[in-house]
Amino acid sequence: MTIRYPNGNQFHEQPTSSGTHNDSINFSNRGMTLEDEINKSNQYYLREGIAVIHKKPTPIQIVSVDYPKRSAARIKEAYFRRASTTDYNGVYRGKYVDFDAKETKNKQSFPLKNFHEHQVEHMRQCLSQQGICFAIIKFMSDQAVYVLKATDLIAYWDAQRTGGRKSIPRKVIEQEGFLIQYRINPLLPYLQAVDSFIE
Amino acid sequence: MTIRYPNGNQFHEQPTSSGTHNDSINFSNRGMTLEDEINKSNQYYLREGIAVIHKKPTPIQIVSVDYPKRSAARIKEAYFRRASTTDYNGVYRGKYVDFDAKETKNKQSFPLKNFHEHQVEHMRQCLSQQGICFAIIKFMSDQAVYVLKATDLIAYWDAQRTGGRKSIPRKVIEQEGFLIQYRINPLLPYLQAVDSFIE
Image (cartoon, rainbow over all chains, first blue to last red; front, side, top):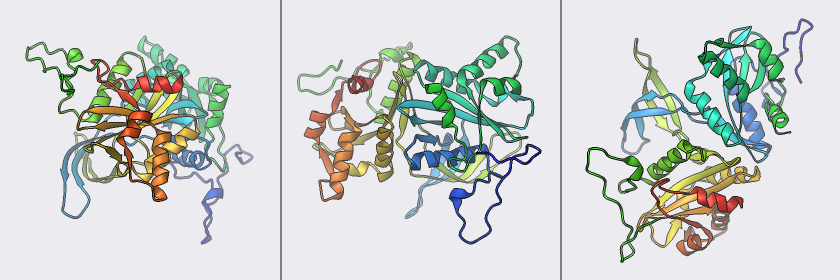
């Protein structure tokens, strides 16, 4: 349930200032990244036995490690590597679920450069194994979050290579995608979209 | 197909010494860890369009990062974190597949201390979502590799808590598990076991 002001802006509950801060009824997402919002939703899905979906750790190339006596190994030099898959996967209702999450400041379209070739290739591979693949796209200007099927994303990705546009128009995302309304718990009930894909 | 000497030891093909080293017919696994063997098998499964299964990156807690001009961000201080899930997951024949791989130098049993509570808990959660969960266990003494269903592992795990033994007897693994014979490609055809679970 999303609460909106008369002008259409989304209402965000004030963080409680009392000492007994109740996390479960505070659905303010100000300052949270989309990743935080999804992680929080996944924690809810896990706790309630609804789905087991985790973000994969960031891939790191480790160059040098110290092993001090009596304390934890300390990584002294390492570099970020580019992920060869999407960031999230798991299992829901017996189905393999795989997705990536991207925010954009653009208002009228979603730039394809937010994705890497490897990630799109990974989605193709998962689709061919009957996995459920999609992107969660957030337009930061008005906090609108959509689930877009990987097949729709791939169609634009492939068209781009043959001279097509470098972004997906927001109107297409609104028409083809699934709008996710912020709720209390889970914060982003994106598995509603997966339900619609399964049924 | 495993080739064995008359004394039962496994035959390992000599690495080719010619300049045109053909990786696809070299199935020597000397010096490879079980992780290497599984990664190599997963690469084959991926390349052939059979399954999409990846090892998750090692989780790292990053403390300090340098952002030098004109070069890649350098992680200066970080620590290894304990994984809250198993190491491998993916999709095969429309099914969610989730497992961990462990080697033991023990000859007669597999010590349960190779697993952490979090990993076993994760397996329970995946099973409740109808995921296919198991452990790949390698006895290093004779290079025998078994796929053991998570349900079997969990039965021993739970019994251990109420005073049961701290390891799974090898005989039980031989009886309940699925022996994986080394092959050329994939090196470890462990999805054979998954086939038997699905059917």
